[in-house]
Length: 313
Image 1: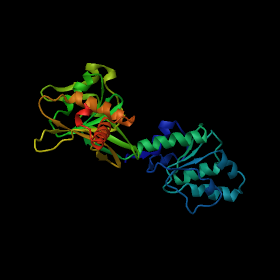
Image 2: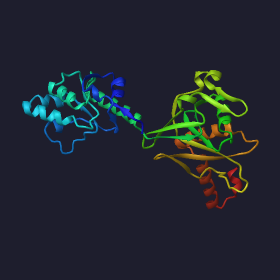
Image 3: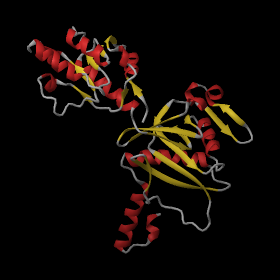
Image 4: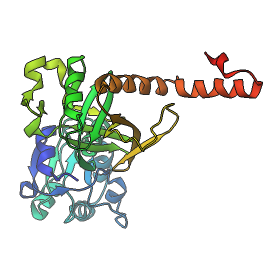
């Protein structure tokens, strides 16, 4: 999980630091947010103090109805040792008790001019992206007709050469050799390239080439959702490969499974074209058109009807 600190929120959302600047290096470890209305009312039994706290018009309006002693005690309790920060929205006037509590405890008190719901939504999206589980895989990621195809296989099997041919055919390279993957949702994987090798492609015997320089800005993209895996392996004459397309193989990355297709490699096979067709066929299946299943259904009807299999032709 990426390390995120309060100062990153200040910079990204252009928040004004009112007090507690000593705590800007506090870490943020959860994507959950809290609007501590019930805590302002005095109930702290289940206070999620490790979350970013957001105070809006509702919470502060109720706060002003409290006695002076209640105001001080409750705002002081909001500033716990593990609280990353407290954000006041709508550009509202921040209570002096909260400013003092922030200075005493080192909890940053921040001000935003955004509406509370807008800030809540934007902050949730930001935290989910930054704190998403991550991993890295050896492979090549290419955008083929809008399908994020992760090409894997042993070193030297032809992954980069396949990607180069795909780029020449008008598709876009995302990453070569190392693919950084973030799981932004339970079924969403986003792949990107490490900054050091971004837009670069390594071809044995040729060396490193810059795809964007050679083929233009339209030949690359910075990130892409991964939905299909093409695994290249050296042809094994003893292995039985799928010839119909009914087998449903999966590759699990983090907590998400994606469709996997194993392509045997041997001289005479155009891997780029096959990979391109695999991506198009994957799109068709998602649209409800499954040629393999249609063939199987037709075959079953012929067998049940006692007709000759040649009727399929």
